[in-house]
Length: 302
Figure (cartoon, rainbow, N blue to C red):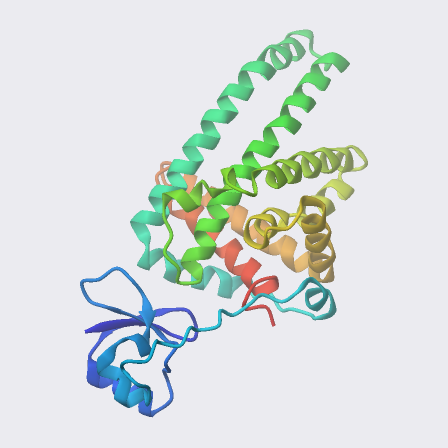
């Protein structure tokens, strides 16, 4: 018995060898289709399994052909082409992914969230005296506001690093690749510096935009939303990722804004179920946002 990864990147099976041979005859699978025998952990090309060599018309002794990975569109292609973002489809696919990987997705999302919460608590130690002073004085002093602003700006880069790793984890699951705890914290790897810069520059400029009638800050916050996954996924430099995100998102800014808003509401909705539901709603929302990223920037971009 085998499981396979279909052209839609979904997992099917288990199915028998005879069923796979029938699919080969119907051209529904080919030599590059990834399969996994029951009881094993590794996915491999169908052509590497000897019992299907005759059906595929390849020599069992010949090395299996290496599937050319689908490559994401180049920057110029992304800027030239249009895209369609279906929020409902993103949520539906995310739910299917969650059902197949429930405990890993919930556990890893919870772990990263706990780390982020701990960092927020530490940062709160620096801002609490200033906030308490404003409450007692019944007004916001420039010094207190400055302290809160600086700590908030400096805290965002760490958040970007952690979210970058979590986004990478979800992207690997979406693409049918092995994913684990190390991927969820891969933001501390080669992309660490660029993720820090994305978080720092993005938060600073967004806060400035909020100060100017709020609307510029909202626009920039949405336009730059996919800068973090672009850095961790495509290994882009921070400013190039921010500009690519802004230019592509701006083509359908209101749709992307609706997507981010809906996923934010989905993530928060879990808190209504005695806070327990948030452990399901958060990974559901994060995965849906990465499906949106794939539809706009990734290998599924039209």
